[in-house]
Image 1 (cartoon, one colour):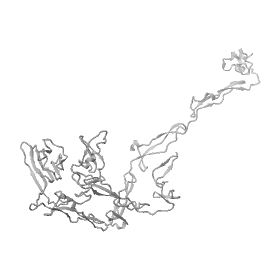
Image 2: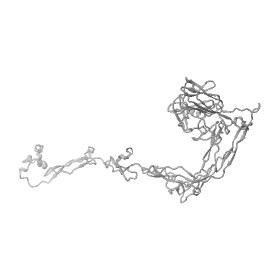
Image 3: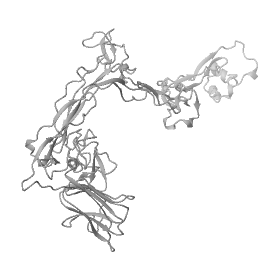
Image 4: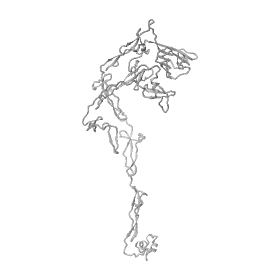
Amino acid sequence: MEVCRELWCLSKSNRCVTNSIPAAEGTLCQTGSIEKGWCYQGECVPFGTWPQSIDGGWGPWSIWGECSRTCGGGVSSSVRHCDSPAPSGGGKYCLGERKRYRSCNTDPCPFGARDFREKQCADFDNMPFRGKYYNWKPYTGGGVKPCALNCLAEGYNFYTERAPAVIDGTQCNADSLDICINGECKHVGCDNILGSDAKEDRCRVCGGDGSTCEAIEGFFNDTLPRGGYMEVVQIPKGSVHIEIKEVAVSKNYIALKSEDDDYYINGAWTIDWPRKFDVAGTAFHYKRPADEPESLEALGPISENLIVMILLQEQNLGIRYKFNVPISRTGSGDNEVGFTWNHLPWSECSATCAGGVQKQEIVCKRLDDGSIVQNNYCDPDSKPPENQRACNTEPCPPEWFIGDWSECSKTCDGGMRSRTVLCIRKIGPSEEETLDSSHCLTHQPIEKESCNNQSCPPQWVPLDWSECTPKCGPGFKHRIVLCKSSDLSKTFPVAHCQEENKPPVRMRCSLGRCPPPRWVTGDWGQCSAQCGLGQQMRTVQCLSYTGQASSDCPDTVRPPSMQQCESKCDSTPISNTEECKDVNKVAYCPLVLKFKFCSRAYFRQMCCKTCQGH
Protein backbone atom coordinates (compact mmCIF):
# COMPACT_ATOMS: atom_id res chain seq x y z
CA MET A 1 0.00 0.00 0.00
CA GLU A 2 2.99 2.33 0.47
CA VAL A 3 4.90 1.37 -2.66
CA CYS A 4 5.45 5.02 -3.57
CA ARG A 5 7.23 5.58 -0.25
CA GLU A 6 9.05 2.27 0.13
CA LEU A 7 9.43 -0.46 -2.49
CA TRP A 8 9.42 -4.11 -1.33
CA CYS A 9 10.46 -7.02 -3.53
CA LEU A 10 10.14 -10.81 -3.26
CA SER A 11 13.55 -12.51 -3.33
CA LYS A 12 14.28 -15.89 -4.89
CA SER A 13 14.04 -17.42 -1.44
CA ASN A 14 10.50 -16.02 -1.04
CA ARG A 15 11.54 -13.35 1.46
CA CYS A 16 10.27 -9.75 1.37
CA VAL A 17 13.24 -7.37 1.18
CA THR A 18 13.61 -3.60 0.79
CA ASN A 19 16.35 -1.01 0.38
CA SER A 20 14.06 1.58 2.02
CA ILE A 21 13.81 3.62 -1.18
CA PRO A 22 10.59 4.60 -2.98
CA ALA A 23 9.42 3.09 -6.23
CA ALA A 24 10.40 4.92 -9.41
CA GLU A 25 8.26 7.80 -10.62
CA GLY A 26 5.33 6.46 -12.67
CA THR A 27 5.19 3.06 -10.98
CA LEU A 28 1.60 1.74 -10.83
CA CYS A 29 0.02 1.94 -7.38
CA GLN A 30 -3.32 1.57 -5.66
CA THR A 31 -4.90 2.97 -2.50
CA GLY A 32 -8.25 2.76 -0.79
CA SER A 33 -9.48 5.79 -2.74
CA ILE A 34 -7.45 5.40 -5.95
CA GLU A 35 -8.14 2.23 -7.92
CA LYS A 36 -5.46 2.91 -10.53
CA GLY A 37 -2.70 5.39 -9.81
CA TRP A 38 0.97 6.08 -10.35
CA CYS A 39 3.75 7.26 -8.10
CA TYR A 40 4.46 10.98 -8.19
CA GLN A 41 6.98 12.51 -5.77
CA GLY A 42 6.44 9.80 -3.16
CA GLU A 43 2.65 9.83 -3.30
CA CYS A 44 0.10 7.65 -5.11
CA VAL A 45 -1.96 9.99 -7.34
CA PRO A 46 -4.60 9.22 -10.03
CA PHE A 47 -2.96 7.73 -13.08
CA GLY A 48 -1.86 10.33 -15.65
CA THR A 49 -2.18 13.37 -13.34
CA TRP A 50 0.49 15.77 -12.07
CA PRO A 51 -0.77 17.49 -8.92
CA GLN A 52 0.21 21.16 -8.68
CA SER A 53 2.78 22.04 -6.04
CA ILE A 54 1.46 23.78 -2.93
CA ASP A 55 3.83 25.86 -0.82
CA GLY A 56 3.55 25.45 2.92
CA GLY A 57 2.04 28.09 5.19
CA TRP A 58 2.52 28.71 8.89
CA GLY A 59 -0.24 27.71 11.27
CA PRO A 60 -1.15 29.76 14.36
CA TRP A 61 1.24 30.15 17.26
CA SER A 62 0.52 27.86 20.19
CA ILE A 63 -0.20 29.28 23.62
CA TRP A 64 2.87 30.13 25.68
CA GLY A 65 4.24 27.13 27.52
CA GLU A 66 5.09 26.75 31.18
CA CYS A 67 7.96 28.90 32.48
CA SER A 68 11.23 27.01 32.89
CA ARG A 69 11.88 28.68 36.28
CA THR A 70 9.74 29.88 39.17
CA CYS A 71 12.02 32.89 39.84
CA GLY A 72 15.25 34.49 38.70
CA GLY A 73 14.29 34.78 35.03
CA GLY A 74 13.07 31.77 33.09
CA VAL A 75 11.75 31.36 29.55
CA SER A 76 8.58 30.00 28.04
CA SER A 77 8.14 29.05 24.41
CA SER A 78 5.50 28.99 21.71
CA VAL A 79 5.62 26.97 18.48
CA ARG A 80 3.87 26.94 15.13
CA HIS A 81 3.83 24.34 12.40
CA CYS A 82 4.03 24.52 8.63
CA ASP A 83 0.60 22.97 8.14
CA SER A 84 -1.73 25.72 6.88
CA PRO A 85 -1.39 24.25 4.34
CA ALA A 86 1.39 21.68 4.55
CA PRO A 87 3.71 21.72 1.52
CA SER A 88 2.76 19.12 -1.10
CA GLY A 89 3.51 18.24 -4.68
CA GLY A 90 7.07 19.55 -4.35
CA GLY A 91 5.96 22.83 -2.74
CA LYS A 92 8.35 24.82 -0.54
CA TYR A 93 8.56 24.55 3.22
CA CYS A 94 7.70 27.61 5.30
CA LEU A 95 10.41 30.18 5.91
CA GLY A 96 10.76 31.97 9.22
CA GLU A 97 10.74 31.31 12.93
CA ARG A 98 9.20 28.00 14.05
CA LYS A 99 9.70 28.53 17.78
CA ARG A 100 9.78 31.74 19.79
CA TYR A 101 10.73 32.48 23.38
CA ARG A 102 9.92 35.13 25.95
CA SER A 103 11.08 35.90 29.46
CA CYS A 104 8.96 34.97 32.46
CA ASN A 105 9.17 34.97 36.27
CA THR A 106 11.91 37.63 36.16
CA ASP A 107 11.59 38.52 39.85
CA PRO A 108 14.71 37.70 41.91
CA CYS A 109 14.69 34.44 43.81
CA PRO A 110 14.39 34.63 47.62
CA PHE A 111 17.61 35.30 49.51
CA GLY A 112 19.49 32.07 50.17
CA ALA A 113 17.70 30.15 47.41
CA ARG A 114 19.77 27.39 45.82
CA ASP A 115 21.59 28.27 42.60
CA PHE A 116 19.67 26.94 39.59
CA ARG A 117 22.70 25.28 37.96
CA GLU A 118 23.73 23.83 41.33
CA LYS A 119 20.30 22.23 41.70
CA GLN A 120 20.57 20.62 38.25
CA CYS A 121 23.92 19.04 39.20
CA ALA A 122 22.54 17.87 42.53
CA ASP A 123 19.74 16.02 40.72
CA PHE A 124 22.41 13.50 39.63
CA ASP A 125 23.52 12.72 43.23
CA ASN A 126 21.20 9.68 43.35
CA MET A 127 22.28 8.33 39.97
CA PRO A 128 25.34 6.03 39.83
CA PHE A 129 28.24 7.20 37.70
CA ARG A 130 30.49 4.33 36.60
CA GLY A 131 29.14 2.25 39.46
CA LYS A 132 29.63 4.86 42.23
CA TYR A 133 27.63 7.71 43.75
CA TYR A 134 29.00 11.27 44.01
CA ASN A 135 27.85 14.67 45.21
CA TRP A 136 27.93 16.92 42.15
CA LYS A 137 28.66 20.67 42.10
CA PRO A 138 28.64 22.96 39.02
CA TYR A 139 31.89 23.26 37.10
CA THR A 140 32.26 26.38 34.94
CA GLY A 141 36.01 26.40 34.40
CA GLY A 142 37.82 26.95 31.14
CA GLY A 143 37.37 24.76 28.12
CA VAL A 144 33.71 23.82 28.70
CA LYS A 145 30.59 24.97 26.89
CA PRO A 146 28.71 27.53 29.02
CA CYS A 147 25.32 25.96 28.27
CA ALA A 148 26.35 22.34 28.90
CA LEU A 149 25.77 20.91 32.38
CA ASN A 150 29.31 20.16 33.57
CA CYS A 151 29.48 18.95 37.16
CA LEU A 152 32.44 18.44 39.51
CA ALA A 153 32.53 15.40 41.79
CA GLU A 154 32.87 16.90 45.28
CA GLY A 155 36.03 15.67 46.98
CA TYR A 156 37.43 14.23 43.75
CA ASN A 157 39.65 15.80 41.12
CA PHE A 158 37.45 15.33 38.04
CA TYR A 159 34.39 16.77 36.34
CA THR A 160 32.13 15.42 33.58
CA GLU A 161 29.33 16.56 31.31
CA ARG A 162 26.13 15.25 32.89
CA ALA A 163 23.83 16.75 30.22
CA PRO A 164 24.53 18.33 26.81
CA ALA A 165 22.34 21.33 27.70
CA VAL A 166 21.17 22.96 30.92
CA ILE A 167 17.49 23.75 31.51
CA ASP A 168 16.31 26.78 29.54
CA GLY A 169 16.70 29.94 31.63
CA THR A 170 19.96 28.91 33.32
CA GLN A 171 22.52 31.72 33.36
CA CYS A 172 25.39 31.20 30.90
CA ASN A 173 27.88 32.21 33.61
CA ALA A 174 27.78 33.76 37.05
CA ASP A 175 28.74 37.30 35.97
CA SER A 176 26.24 37.63 33.13
CA LEU A 177 22.48 37.93 32.83
CA ASP A 178 22.56 36.04 29.50
CA ILE A 179 20.68 32.74 29.65
CA CYS A 180 20.83 29.39 27.88
CA ILE A 181 18.07 28.40 25.46
CA ASN A 182 18.28 25.13 23.55
CA GLY A 183 21.94 24.80 24.55
CA GLU A 184 22.89 28.24 23.20
CA CYS A 185 23.67 31.44 25.08
CA LYS A 186 21.11 34.22 24.38
CA HIS A 187 21.40 37.88 25.38
CA VAL A 188 19.29 39.20 28.24
CA GLY A 189 19.11 42.88 29.17
CA CYS A 190 19.63 44.14 32.69
CA ASP A 191 15.82 44.27 32.99
CA ASN A 192 15.88 40.44 32.78
CA ILE A 193 14.03 40.54 29.43
CA LEU A 194 15.20 38.21 26.68
CA GLY A 195 16.70 40.20 23.78
CA SER A 196 16.33 43.52 25.62
CA ASP A 197 18.81 46.34 24.93
CA ALA A 198 18.65 47.61 28.50
CA LYS A 199 22.19 48.05 29.89
CA GLU A 200 23.68 48.69 33.28
CA ASP A 201 25.70 51.83 33.84
CA ARG A 202 29.05 51.85 35.61
CA CYS A 203 27.19 51.81 38.94
CA ARG A 204 25.31 48.64 37.91
CA VAL A 205 22.03 50.60 37.72
CA CYS A 206 19.86 49.29 34.89
CA GLY A 207 19.32 52.12 32.41
CA GLY A 208 21.20 54.50 34.71
CA ASP A 209 23.45 57.39 33.72
CA GLY A 210 26.39 56.55 35.99
CA SER A 211 25.69 59.39 38.43
CA THR A 212 25.04 57.28 41.55
CA CYS A 213 28.64 56.19 42.12
CA GLU A 214 32.20 57.45 41.83
CA ALA A 215 35.36 55.67 40.68
CA ILE A 216 38.16 54.91 43.11
CA GLU A 217 41.58 54.05 41.66
CA GLY A 218 44.98 53.65 43.28
CA PHE A 219 48.44 52.10 43.27
CA PHE A 220 49.98 50.38 46.30
CA ASN A 221 53.70 49.52 46.43
CA ASP A 222 54.57 49.63 50.14
CA THR A 223 56.56 46.69 51.44
CA LEU A 224 57.70 45.00 54.68
CA PRO A 225 61.34 44.09 55.30
CA ARG A 226 60.45 40.73 56.90
CA GLY A 227 57.35 39.91 54.87
CA GLY A 228 53.86 39.09 56.13
CA TYR A 229 50.31 40.40 55.59
CA MET A 230 49.88 44.07 54.73
CA GLU A 231 46.70 46.08 54.06
CA VAL A 232 46.29 47.39 50.53
CA VAL A 233 42.88 49.10 50.48
CA GLN A 234 39.42 48.99 52.08
CA ILE A 235 36.44 48.48 49.77
CA PRO A 236 33.16 49.97 51.09
CA LYS A 237 29.85 48.12 51.09
CA GLY A 238 27.91 48.49 47.83
CA SER A 239 31.01 48.84 45.63
CA VAL A 240 30.85 47.44 42.10
CA HIS A 241 33.27 46.58 39.26
CA ILE A 242 36.10 45.66 41.62
CA GLU A 243 39.52 44.98 40.03
CA ILE A 244 42.71 44.20 41.99
CA LYS A 245 45.84 43.27 40.01
CA GLU A 246 49.59 42.97 40.53
CA VAL A 247 51.69 44.89 38.02
CA ALA A 248 54.18 42.03 37.59
CA VAL A 249 54.56 38.33 38.33
CA SER A 250 55.86 37.81 41.87
CA LYS A 251 55.92 35.43 44.83
CA ASN A 252 53.48 37.66 46.72
CA TYR A 253 49.77 36.78 47.05
CA ILE A 254 46.61 38.92 47.10
CA ALA A 255 44.35 38.15 50.09
CA LEU A 256 40.82 39.21 51.06
CA LYS A 257 39.29 39.50 54.53
CA SER A 258 36.34 41.00 56.42
CA GLU A 259 36.44 43.85 58.92
CA ASP A 260 36.39 41.15 61.62
CA ASP A 261 39.69 39.70 60.31
CA ASP A 262 37.99 36.61 58.86
CA TYR A 263 39.97 35.71 55.73
CA TYR A 264 38.04 34.65 52.65
CA ILE A 265 41.02 34.15 50.29
CA ASN A 266 44.65 33.21 51.05
CA GLY A 267 44.42 33.56 54.83
CA ALA A 268 46.52 32.04 57.65
CA TRP A 269 49.58 31.66 55.37
CA THR A 270 47.62 29.14 53.28
CA ILE A 271 47.46 29.71 49.54
CA ASP A 272 44.16 28.82 47.82
CA TRP A 273 43.87 27.39 44.32
CA PRO A 274 42.70 29.98 41.75
CA ARG A 275 38.92 29.71 41.38
CA LYS A 276 35.62 31.47 41.99
CA PHE A 277 34.86 32.53 45.61
CA ASP A 278 31.32 33.51 46.70
CA VAL A 279 32.01 36.39 49.11
CA ALA A 280 29.81 39.22 50.39
CA GLY A 281 26.91 38.47 48.05
CA THR A 282 28.94 38.43 44.84
CA ALA A 283 31.41 36.21 42.99
CA PHE A 284 35.14 37.00 43.26
CA HIS A 285 37.29 35.48 40.52
CA TYR A 286 40.81 34.76 41.77
CA LYS A 287 43.27 34.18 38.91
CA ARG A 288 46.95 33.23 39.12
CA PRO A 289 48.30 32.28 35.66
CA ALA A 290 51.81 30.87 35.43
CA ASP A 291 53.11 33.67 33.20
CA GLU A 292 50.81 36.62 34.07
CA PRO A 293 50.31 38.77 37.19
CA GLU A 294 47.83 37.67 39.85
CA SER A 295 44.36 39.30 39.89
CA LEU A 296 41.08 39.43 41.83
CA GLU A 297 37.86 40.68 40.18
CA ALA A 298 34.16 40.97 41.09
CA LEU A 299 31.11 42.65 39.57
CA GLY A 300 29.49 43.44 42.92
CA PRO A 301 27.75 45.02 44.64
CA ILE A 302 29.28 43.70 47.85
CA SER A 303 27.08 43.36 50.94
CA GLU A 304 29.77 44.26 53.52
CA ASN A 305 32.99 46.20 53.85
CA LEU A 306 36.02 44.21 52.66
CA ILE A 307 39.77 44.67 53.10
CA VAL A 308 42.28 43.73 50.40
CA MET A 309 45.58 42.43 51.84
CA ILE A 310 48.86 41.29 50.32
CA LEU A 311 50.96 38.43 51.70
CA LEU A 312 54.52 39.63 51.08
CA GLN A 313 57.29 37.11 50.51
CA GLU A 314 59.53 39.40 48.45
CA GLN A 315 59.63 43.08 47.50
CA ASN A 316 56.24 44.47 46.48
CA LEU A 317 56.45 45.59 42.84
CA GLY A 318 53.03 47.19 43.06
CA ILE A 319 49.28 46.51 43.02
CA ARG A 320 46.72 48.52 41.03
CA TYR A 321 43.13 48.65 42.26
CA LYS A 322 39.92 50.28 41.08
CA PHE A 323 36.24 50.03 42.01
CA ASN A 324 33.12 52.18 41.93
CA VAL A 325 31.70 53.33 45.26
CA PRO A 326 28.03 54.39 45.69
CA ILE A 327 27.52 58.09 46.38
CA SER A 328 25.65 58.75 49.61
CA ARG A 329 23.34 61.75 49.10
CA THR A 330 21.02 63.50 51.50
CA GLY A 331 18.05 65.68 50.61
CA SER A 332 17.67 69.37 51.49
CA GLY A 333 16.84 70.02 55.10
CA ASP A 334 15.69 67.19 57.29
CA ASN A 335 13.11 65.81 54.80
CA GLU A 336 13.74 62.51 53.02
CA VAL A 337 14.43 62.59 49.30
CA GLY A 338 11.49 61.54 47.12
CA PHE A 339 11.66 59.12 44.18
CA THR A 340 9.37 58.63 41.21
CA TRP A 341 9.00 56.46 38.11
CA ASN A 342 9.93 58.06 34.77
CA HIS A 343 9.87 57.01 31.10
CA LEU A 344 13.19 57.13 29.29
CA PRO A 345 13.30 58.48 25.69
CA TRP A 346 12.26 56.10 22.95
CA SER A 347 14.93 53.49 22.24
CA GLU A 348 16.33 52.87 18.79
CA CYS A 349 14.17 50.68 16.57
CA SER A 350 15.00 46.99 17.04
CA ALA A 351 14.97 46.41 13.25
CA THR A 352 15.82 48.52 10.23
CA CYS A 353 12.90 47.13 8.17
CA ALA A 354 9.98 44.68 8.20
CA GLY A 355 8.70 45.95 11.53
CA GLY A 356 10.73 46.60 14.62
CA VAL A 357 9.87 47.79 18.11
CA GLN A 358 10.73 50.94 20.04
CA LYS A 359 10.46 50.97 23.82
CA GLN A 360 10.27 53.55 26.56
CA GLU A 361 11.76 51.87 29.56
CA ILE A 362 10.73 52.77 33.11
CA VAL A 363 13.44 53.98 35.55
CA CYS A 364 13.40 55.27 39.09
CA LYS A 365 14.67 58.87 39.54
CA ARG A 366 15.39 61.12 42.48
CA LEU A 367 13.04 64.09 42.71
CA ASP A 368 15.74 66.53 43.84
CA ASP A 369 18.28 66.13 41.02
CA GLY A 370 16.62 63.78 38.52
CA SER A 371 19.43 61.19 38.73
CA ILE A 372 18.58 57.54 38.00
CA VAL A 373 18.78 55.18 40.97
CA GLN A 374 18.08 51.50 41.53
CA ASN A 375 14.43 50.45 41.11
CA ASN A 376 13.98 49.44 44.74
CA TYR A 377 13.87 53.13 45.75
CA CYS A 378 10.51 53.54 43.99
CA ASP A 379 7.17 52.02 44.91
CA PRO A 380 6.79 48.81 42.85
CA ASP A 381 2.96 48.97 43.03
CA SER A 382 2.86 52.33 41.25
CA LYS A 383 5.26 51.36 38.45
CA PRO A 384 3.60 52.26 35.11
CA PRO A 385 3.72 49.91 32.13
CA GLU A 386 6.53 50.19 29.62
CA ASN A 387 5.55 51.96 26.40
CA GLN A 388 6.10 50.19 23.12
CA ARG A 389 5.40 51.07 19.47
CA ALA A 390 6.05 49.62 16.04
CA CYS A 391 8.67 51.19 13.78
CA ASN A 392 10.32 50.69 10.36
CA THR A 393 7.38 48.65 9.11
CA GLU A 394 8.29 48.82 5.41
CA PRO A 395 9.44 45.50 3.84
CA CYS A 396 13.15 44.73 3.71
CA PRO A 397 14.99 44.70 0.37
CA PRO A 398 14.97 41.29 -1.33
CA GLU A 399 17.95 39.10 -0.44
CA TRP A 400 19.18 35.61 -1.10
CA PHE A 401 18.32 32.85 1.35
CA ILE A 402 21.08 30.23 1.17
CA GLY A 403 20.47 26.80 2.73
CA ASP A 404 23.06 24.33 3.92
CA TRP A 405 24.92 22.16 1.43
CA SER A 406 23.64 18.62 1.08
CA GLU A 407 25.98 15.69 1.55
CA CYS A 408 28.21 14.98 -1.43
CA SER A 409 26.80 12.29 -3.71
CA LYS A 410 30.19 10.53 -3.75
CA THR A 411 33.00 10.31 -1.25
CA CYS A 412 35.70 10.50 -3.94
CA ASP A 413 36.24 10.66 -7.71
CA GLY A 414 34.05 13.74 -7.97
CA GLY A 415 30.47 13.96 -6.78
CA MET A 416 27.86 16.71 -6.62
CA ARG A 417 26.21 18.57 -3.77
CA SER A 418 23.33 21.01 -3.79
CA ARG A 419 21.64 23.61 -1.62
CA THR A 420 18.48 25.68 -1.58
CA VAL A 421 18.87 29.23 -2.92
CA LEU A 422 15.77 31.44 -2.75
CA CYS A 423 15.12 35.12 -3.30
CA ILE A 424 13.16 36.21 -0.24
CA ARG A 425 11.91 39.44 1.25
CA LYS A 426 11.15 39.94 4.91
CA ILE A 427 7.77 41.68 5.24
CA GLY A 428 7.23 41.31 8.98
CA PRO A 429 9.07 40.41 12.19
CA SER A 430 8.40 36.70 11.58
CA GLU A 431 7.02 36.70 8.05
CA GLU A 432 8.87 36.29 4.76
CA GLU A 433 7.77 35.91 1.14
CA THR A 434 9.53 34.16 -1.71
CA LEU A 435 10.09 36.20 -4.87
CA ASP A 436 11.27 35.48 -8.39
CA SER A 437 15.05 35.40 -8.67
CA SER A 438 15.04 38.60 -10.76
CA HIS A 439 14.01 40.67 -7.72
CA CYS A 440 17.35 40.02 -6.00
CA LEU A 441 19.83 42.45 -7.50
CA THR A 442 23.06 40.72 -6.48
CA HIS A 443 24.53 37.75 -8.31
CA GLN A 444 22.65 34.53 -7.52
CA PRO A 445 24.75 32.10 -5.45
CA ILE A 446 25.34 28.70 -7.04
CA GLU A 447 22.95 25.88 -6.17
CA LYS A 448 25.14 22.95 -7.26
CA GLU A 449 28.86 22.32 -7.25
CA SER A 450 31.27 19.45 -7.57
CA CYS A 451 32.78 17.96 -4.42
CA ASN A 452 35.21 15.29 -3.25
CA ASN A 453 37.18 15.51 -6.49
CA GLN A 454 40.13 13.61 -5.09
CA SER A 455 40.83 10.19 -6.59
CA CYS A 456 39.42 7.19 -4.81
CA PRO A 457 41.97 4.77 -3.35
CA PRO A 458 42.59 1.45 -5.17
CA GLN A 459 39.90 -1.13 -4.57
CA TRP A 460 39.47 -4.89 -4.72
CA VAL A 461 37.65 -6.12 -7.81
CA PRO A 462 36.63 -9.82 -7.75
CA LEU A 463 36.26 -11.82 -10.97
CA ASP A 464 33.62 -14.52 -11.50
CA TRP A 465 33.58 -17.67 -9.39
CA SER A 466 34.87 -20.88 -10.93
CA GLU A 467 32.67 -23.98 -11.10
CA CYS A 468 32.34 -26.00 -7.94
CA THR A 469 34.76 -28.92 -7.68
CA PRO A 470 34.22 -31.82 -7.26
CA LYS A 471 30.98 -32.17 -9.20
CA CYS A 472 29.10 -33.56 -6.21
CA GLY A 473 29.35 -33.53 -2.45
CA PRO A 474 31.10 -30.75 -0.46
CA GLY A 475 33.71 -28.84 -2.41
CA PHE A 476 35.09 -25.38 -3.17
CA LYS A 477 34.84 -22.75 -5.85
CA HIS A 478 37.55 -20.18 -6.46
CA ARG A 479 37.95 -16.77 -8.02
CA ILE A 480 40.64 -14.19 -8.71
CA VAL A 481 40.54 -10.84 -6.84
CA LEU A 482 42.48 -7.95 -8.41
CA CYS A 483 43.61 -4.62 -6.93
CA LYS A 484 42.45 -1.99 -9.43
CA SER A 485 42.02 1.76 -9.70
CA SER A 486 38.61 3.23 -8.92
CA ASP A 487 37.84 3.59 -12.64
CA LEU A 488 38.97 -0.04 -13.21
CA SER A 489 41.47 1.08 -15.85
CA LYS A 490 44.66 0.09 -13.98
CA THR A 491 45.73 -2.98 -12.05
CA PHE A 492 48.05 -2.49 -9.08
CA PRO A 493 50.11 -4.91 -6.96
CA VAL A 494 47.99 -6.36 -4.18
CA ALA A 495 49.98 -4.41 -1.57
CA HIS A 496 48.26 -1.20 -2.76
CA CYS A 497 44.87 -2.40 -1.49
CA GLN A 498 43.93 -2.97 2.15
CA GLU A 499 44.31 -6.64 2.98
CA GLU A 500 41.61 -6.57 5.67
CA ASN A 501 39.03 -5.50 3.06
CA LYS A 502 39.94 -8.16 0.49
CA PRO A 503 36.94 -10.25 -0.60
CA PRO A 504 37.26 -14.05 -0.16
CA VAL A 505 38.92 -16.00 -2.99
CA ARG A 506 37.58 -19.43 -1.95
CA MET A 507 34.08 -20.49 -0.93
CA ARG A 508 32.53 -23.76 0.14
CA CYS A 509 29.96 -25.22 -2.26
CA SER A 510 28.01 -28.38 -3.09
CA LEU A 511 26.26 -29.54 -6.26
CA GLY A 512 24.26 -32.21 -4.45
CA ARG A 513 24.94 -35.60 -2.90
CA CYS A 514 27.33 -37.90 -4.75
CA PRO A 515 26.03 -41.28 -6.13
CA PRO A 516 26.93 -44.27 -3.88
CA PRO A 517 29.79 -46.71 -4.75
CA ARG A 518 28.77 -49.56 -7.07
CA TRP A 519 30.03 -52.98 -8.23
CA VAL A 520 31.83 -52.80 -11.56
CA THR A 521 32.52 -55.98 -13.51
CA GLY A 522 35.08 -56.72 -16.21
CA ASP A 523 34.66 -58.91 -19.27
CA TRP A 524 34.53 -62.72 -18.86
CA GLY A 525 37.82 -64.46 -19.54
CA GLN A 526 38.32 -67.53 -21.79
CA CYS A 527 36.74 -70.82 -20.80
CA SER A 528 39.24 -72.98 -18.93
CA ALA A 529 38.25 -76.15 -20.95
CA GLN A 530 39.11 -76.51 -24.60
CA CYS A 531 36.54 -79.29 -24.82
CA GLY A 532 33.47 -79.77 -22.69
CA LEU A 533 32.69 -78.02 -19.40
CA GLY A 534 35.08 -75.54 -17.85
CA GLN A 535 35.24 -72.24 -15.88
CA GLN A 536 35.68 -68.63 -16.87
CA MET A 537 36.62 -65.69 -14.58
CA ARG A 538 36.08 -61.90 -14.56
CA THR A 539 37.09 -58.97 -12.31
CA VAL A 540 34.51 -57.57 -9.85
CA GLN A 541 35.45 -54.25 -8.15
CA CYS A 542 33.69 -51.82 -5.75
CA LEU A 543 34.36 -48.33 -7.16
CA SER A 544 33.28 -44.82 -6.12
CA TYR A 545 31.84 -42.35 -8.65
CA THR A 546 35.40 -41.04 -9.13
CA GLY A 547 36.69 -44.52 -10.04
CA GLN A 548 38.57 -45.07 -6.81
CA ALA A 549 38.41 -48.36 -4.91
CA SER A 550 35.85 -48.47 -2.13
CA SER A 551 34.68 -50.89 0.54
CA ASP A 552 31.15 -49.52 0.86
CA CYS A 553 29.35 -51.68 -1.75
CA PRO A 554 26.76 -54.12 -0.29
CA ASP A 555 27.92 -57.74 -0.52
CA THR A 556 24.38 -58.94 -1.10
CA VAL A 557 24.35 -57.58 -4.62
CA ARG A 558 27.93 -58.45 -5.55
CA PRO A 559 28.02 -60.05 -9.04
CA PRO A 560 29.77 -63.46 -9.37
CA SER A 561 33.37 -63.40 -10.48
CA MET A 562 33.33 -67.04 -11.85
CA GLN A 563 30.88 -69.09 -13.91
CA GLN A 564 30.72 -72.45 -15.65
CA CYS A 565 31.38 -72.61 -19.37
CA GLU A 566 31.46 -75.28 -22.07
CA SER A 567 33.64 -75.58 -25.15
CA LYS A 568 32.80 -77.71 -28.16
CA CYS A 569 34.95 -80.83 -28.38
CA ASP A 570 36.80 -81.89 -31.59
CA SER A 571 35.49 -85.33 -32.87
CA THR A 572 39.00 -86.46 -33.87
CA PRO A 573 40.66 -88.32 -31.02
CA ILE A 574 43.93 -87.01 -29.79
CA SER A 575 46.67 -89.12 -31.37
CA ASN A 576 49.69 -87.42 -30.04
CA THR A 577 50.16 -88.55 -26.51
CA GLU A 578 52.54 -85.71 -25.92
CA GLU A 579 49.65 -83.30 -26.25
CA CYS A 580 47.72 -85.12 -23.47
CA LYS A 581 48.67 -83.57 -20.17
CA ASP A 582 47.17 -82.35 -16.94
CA VAL A 583 46.20 -78.66 -17.16
CA ASN A 584 48.50 -76.54 -15.09
CA LYS A 585 49.41 -79.60 -13.06
CA VAL A 586 46.20 -79.27 -11.02
CA ALA A 587 46.57 -80.80 -7.60
CA TYR A 588 43.27 -82.67 -7.56
CA CYS A 589 43.90 -84.96 -10.62
CA PRO A 590 44.81 -87.99 -8.44
CA LEU A 591 41.50 -87.50 -6.65
CA VAL A 592 39.66 -87.42 -10.01
CA LEU A 593 41.17 -90.83 -10.77
CA LYS A 594 40.49 -92.16 -7.27
CA PHE A 595 36.82 -91.18 -7.29
CA LYS A 596 36.37 -92.32 -10.90
CA PHE A 597 35.53 -88.89 -12.38
CA CYS A 598 37.60 -89.50 -15.53
CA SER A 599 34.44 -90.49 -17.35
CA ARG A 600 33.30 -86.92 -17.18
CA ALA A 601 34.41 -84.79 -20.09
CA TYR A 602 35.44 -81.81 -17.98
CA PHE A 603 37.74 -83.76 -15.62
CA ARG A 604 39.11 -85.88 -18.51
CA GLN A 605 40.16 -82.62 -20.23
CA MET A 606 41.65 -81.10 -17.08
CA CYS A 607 43.45 -84.32 -16.05
CA CYS A 608 44.07 -85.85 -19.50
CA LYS A 609 47.38 -87.53 -18.61
CA THR A 610 46.13 -88.93 -15.31
CA CYS A 611 42.91 -90.30 -16.90
CA GLN A 612 44.71 -91.75 -19.94
CA GLY A 613 43.93 -95.44 -20.26
CA HIS A 614 41.17 -95.37 -17.68
